[in-house]
Amino acid sequence: MPPVNIHEIEYLKIFVTLLVLLYASILDYKYREIDNKSWLSLVAMGFIFNIYEFFISGSYEILKFLIISSISGLLVAYVLYHTGAMGGGDGKIFMGIAAMFPLFPFATFSLFPLFFLSVFANSVFLSAFLPLIFFIKNIPNIKGVKSLKEVVLLFIGYKREEKDVKEFEAVIARDDKINIFQNANLMELGTTGKSTKEVWVTPALPFIIPITLGFILSLVYGDIVTWIVLRVM
Image (cartoon, rainbow, N blue to C red; front, top):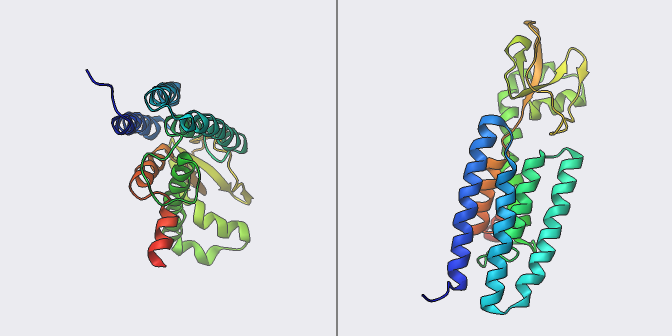
């Protein structure tokens, strides 16, 4: 039986990564967290695939970028977790993608030297549409805005009676107390309040879903912002 060639390995890596991301997306949507099997499987299989690819190609570039990409993914995951910008599972998924794809699987447009950074940029770009949706929903509340913090609320949440706050929503403003900077790892979701008073809430987002979509965009177009700019120019 002939050995698997480089192109077949890349397609296999893409298939495996998509399966893991879809599995993690379902978990994130249902529970707003993922299990360690998701990112650990990507890291482990990434090293296996890429070391095998090194043996059949003899290219030390694969090993060099595997080390660079994996360390970079670890640093990004660390920063995202400790700043509270994303949940721990979200950051670790980037570690898995970094280990799986030290090099770009296809030639695509990107300003970034590492593939997982392109995925990260695309996932942030996709998530950026959510504030616009919130603002449109909050247009009737514009007249009641009295401060800069209340302007920010228009883009990050919506009003709901306290008794109706849902399982995956966090209260960010109650009466005159406003907390617009929520740590993704420390958000207190849901409420025990039974008041009919309106509060501002923000949803805990299943960020693995835009990561999955960002991964697909990176495969097809590369860095979508770069792609758009180049198309316009």
